[in-house]
Image 1 (cartoon, helix red, strand yellow):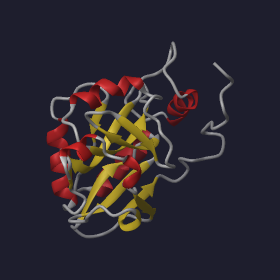
Image 2 (cartoon, rainbow, N blue to C red):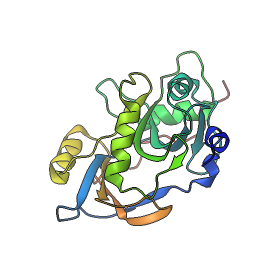
Image 3 (cartoon, rainbow, N blue to C red):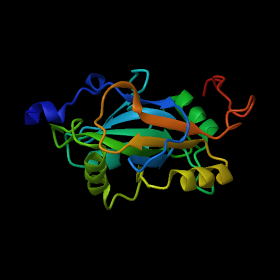
Image 4 (cartoon, rainbow, N blue to C red):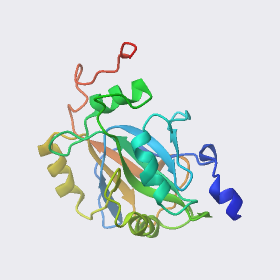
Length: 213
């Protein structure tokens, strides 16, 4: 990818890989991550941009992320979840949704963070054909030393232990990802989301539009 193209990567050209809902897989060829409850976002570094899963532009919605993304090497595309954390570090979907509906910064706004779990482009090089372990290692190195706004989502081998941990904390669930898998747009059997029963009970989440600011 030429440097000029790398500096102005079109996020619309990267279809998201999606997890299918399922049960805990068995075997040693899986990695497990926390499932963060917010909005799925693609993020571009250098010349910062944010794109929603549905395709909308969200760069101006969360200006607090601009400096962190701008400070990273240009020409990278991160796959992430936009989240707002509660006072013990759990994602608070209602708080994030309230922020997103305002589509801007405002007095009293709670800060948004990007929980980055995959890397699609590294310094202008498309790495979607790299195995997931190599992509995540590159992402971890890219985010090393970043302390504001960006969070690296690590993976573990013990899926059952992670699931019991998130269940005890009242979180949404986990995502299982097949070791060695490549990044491919669309729903994939290589990614599975395992949700905690009852997490999405009626009335728990508020999705009604806020009144005008």
